[in-house]
Length: 272
Ligand code: PXL
Image (cartoon, rainbow, N blue to C red):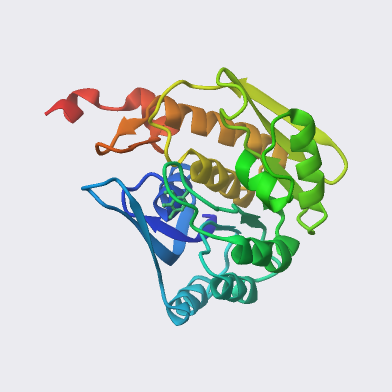
């Protein structure tokens, strides 16, 4: 069985972060391992998110545990300090496909990382990555181009990000400049590949970005060619968004099980 590892924050409410990663890895029939960098909690009184970073030594020990055996692909998510980014870069074996999901903020959260951490991602981690999957906003920040408002600007951002050393840039279009139709854009250092698809209208889409990145990582571990991995990840996330669930008064999450279990799901048992 393929082994897939994530180095990410815990989203206590279970939609994004390493919860999304592990659930997605499982759905892909892979074995998931995880190192927790931080914990994101939700204040039930206000809906505010709070971030708690774990001590670097604890992260180091988790990384040593993960890489005690062979791993087929690795994903990084929220790495909330420069020190943590350095530790991750140092302990990641260089011969394993690495996907860097450059988590800067979450939906409805304040930014988790600031300029110094963005610089560390650019200099320390992205040069070792096979793939990075920024959303539109993260792509604008990583490329230092500000808000991206057109496909042309997405292309410019992808080119600038590729200059950091990462081989494939996949920008997640989301619903930021068109609420009906969205575009995921892949740049491999030479050509652009377009993946247009309809936006699914629902407020319950927290965790979509993490899930997309985790799906690509698991597919890469299973030796899917990247184009197939991206197509499969889009279908997987579309199913997850279509089955989104309200989880608390503030937020609703994608359901990571939808693609594989959607039709077989025992709705009746849920109602008991
Ligand atoms: O979806 C971005 C994200 C990533 N990682 C963690 C999160 C979130 C969003 O809330 O909590 C840990």
